[in-house]
Amino acid sequence: PMCDNTSVTFSGTIQPLISSKCQSCHNSATMNGNISLEGYDNIQQQAENGNLIGVVSHEPGFSPMPQGEPKLPDCQIEAIQIWIDNGTPND
Image 1 (cartoon, rainbow, N blue to C red):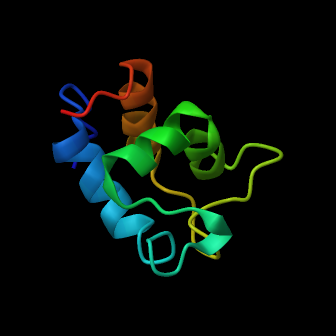
Image 2 (tube, rainbow, N blue to C red):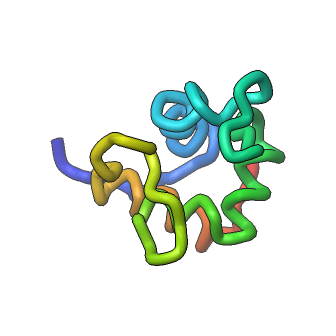
Image 3 (spheres, one colour):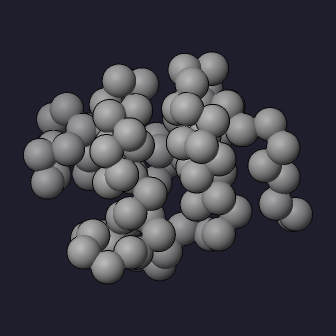
């Protein structure tokens, strides 16, 4: 399928992505790296401080995520960047 990031929303795009790719390790119970990505506030905090895009983009100085797995598809990374560029709305 083609990459369609024309209508990126937190509830429709970002939350399901984080839930499927990140929350098995980053939840309030496991807190790997002392990071929980459960709920908007936690995800928004990691997006605003630059960690979220840094780790999924495998940027230097960031621990590449998902750990031990291939990098997320460019389309998904692009969606995260669009959401951040839009001001991380809770939509």
